[in-house]
Amino acid sequence: MSTSTRHCRQMETFPLDIFTHIIEEIDSTQDHETLRSLSTCCHHLSPLCQRRIFRVIAFEISTWPTILSKLSRLDCTLKTSPHIGLYVRSVQMSFQTAMHRRVAPIYELLASILSKVHRLETMHLYWNSQGIGDWSALVSNTMCHQFCAQIHQISQTRNLIHLGIRYITHFPFDLVTTYVKVIDLTEADCYCVDVDIIERSPSVVAMSATDRSESPYPVVRNFSLGRIAWPRILSEIVINERKLLHTPPSVPPFDFTQVKYLSVPWDCENDRVQTEKILGNARMIHSFSLKVNLEVGFEGLSKMIETTALLLTMTTLSVEIGYPFRPGIETLSDPFDSLRKELSSLAPSNALQTLCVRIAFDTTIIDRFSEYCVKPLAKVLTQERFLRLRRARLECNIHLLEFQNAVSFGDVVGTDLSERLEKEFMDYTSIDALKFSCVVRIVD
Image (cartoon, rainbow, N blue to C red; front, side, top):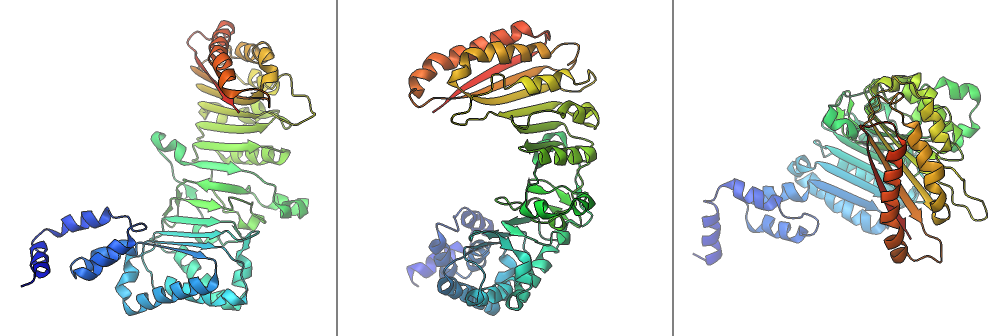
């Protein structure tokens, strides 16, 4: 009896769980050859290794002759060994090339491969070629019919828990989001829902006012880590991270009534309108995060809060002020002016407990920052108007000018400015129980 045979027989006496744990610890990407060797050396380890090797299948559709060969081998493997298709849990496809007749066989092979995997939990479709992918163009191409049909079918399977669609317009999200509803999250999970709202796609400009008013749903970008129910739970939907949706029909009809965390940018007037639509449907938002371009300002924020459920539910308000840095244009003397006006107009019945303000400015206004910005802001936070406010935080990113040194400037200004702002803020606020902190960062 050879030594290798004797060792193999000794291995057979060990519990299978031991080998399962060992194989699970092997990185299937970096140690692919190790798994293949284990799979061929012992028939007992073969199914364990195959399950690990084929759990995640990732394609980068770029140079078509190379990828065509790889896809052909995989398709042949799944055809001759159907059980391997049951091991596949994730398929990730990144398209690096535009659609044309030359790469049509790739889509046929992808359709054949997808038809042989029946337990997919994750599917990613990323369009990383130039421009943005158009799903309707694929559907209308006869050579891609089977591929699109397989994607549609997978989107509706109950096993799917993670769907990522990036840089592709006109994807039929209604397949997975019909009658969707954001699940009621627990307090500990309130940050699981993060919605960024914006509407500036080219087609929106071209649309008539009548068409625009017909769609009750705002354009949504980066709906990440949300939980959608019906007919199953989806853990992630990512929509056109790089560019926005082109037409309202592509927008999933999300129900925002149970969302607890909302993050929105205000870069133009349209953003304000979309935020108002969201807040009009929201009922349980606890944390509201707002990034504002000062050229747009905070005008209308207090009214928006008071006319929605936000007044009674919002306990945390985070504001990031985008200070304009433009050569030849004088910087604004008081970046907090618009925010102070809105806070001073807020009804005393508000539920705000935590306020966080982030701002970036250059060194030219350091001397004026406390006198014109911090002190007036502290005076606005009165005991009479903010009965429940207990924490306030100010984060300052100071951008150095070209001739200034980050190390020396930071040593002199950073700590001193932080301590001075904290002291002056507390001297002027009337809320005795308020805990205030200030963080100053020097940005080179």
